[in-house]
View 1 (cartoon, rainbow, N blue to C red):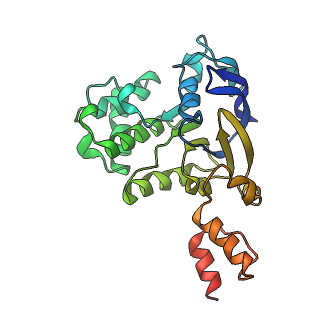
View 2: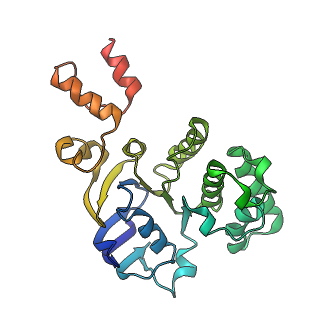
View 3: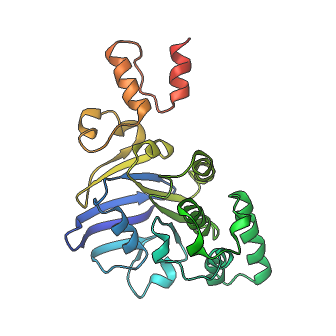
Length: 261
C-alpha cells in the first residue's frame, strides 16, 4: 500500500514530471542539493503551492477540496518556520494540531507537556515562537509535527545544523517511529540516509534514483555524481580497494570493531 504517490507533478521550472511513490511505513530519505526542489515538494504537500499532475495521500487525491482530510493524515517539520507560525506562544503552536483534531483542553495540555518534556523544551512553552533561536525553532517545529501522532511524517532539512544533543533527540524519536509510520526526510546530508530503509536522489526537480538502502550504495560511482557518500560507505569502499574488507558498512562503530578482530 502506498502512503504517497506523485505522478507527473510539475511546478513552474522547479519540478519536471516528478513521479515516485512511498510505500506505507517506509522511511525514505530524499537527498538533494539546495535548489533541487525539496522544499517545493513539501510546500505542495502542505497545500501552499498549486501544481500540475497528481498526488495521492493514502489514495486520496491532494487538492483544495481534500486538504481537510489529508491534513489529518500527514504532519510536517519544516526549516523555514517563520513563514508558518501564527500562534502567540510555543504552547499554542504545539496545541494547534490537537485542537484541529478536536481534542479536549485537558488532553491537549497533557500531550503538550509530554512532548515538551521528551524534547526538553519545557522552558520554551510560554515564549513567543519568533523569539526563538535557530535550533529552538527547529525543535519546536519537530515537536508540533509529532504531537498528533500522524500516519505520515515529512521532514524538510530539520536535522541539519543542529547540535549533537538536539540531533540525537530527533533521531532517537525517528528510530522509534521507524516501521510504524511513513517517514519522508528531505535533506542535503547523505549521512541521514543511513537512518531509513530507502534512499532517493532529487536532482533538478526529478527523482533520478530510488532504491532500498542496501542496494542504493552498491553503485557508488554513479551515486557520487550527485551526492557526497556517507563517511562509513566511503571508508568501506576504500578498505575494499585494499582488500581489508569485503563488506559495505553503514555503522562506523561496527566497521571499526570488525577491523580490530
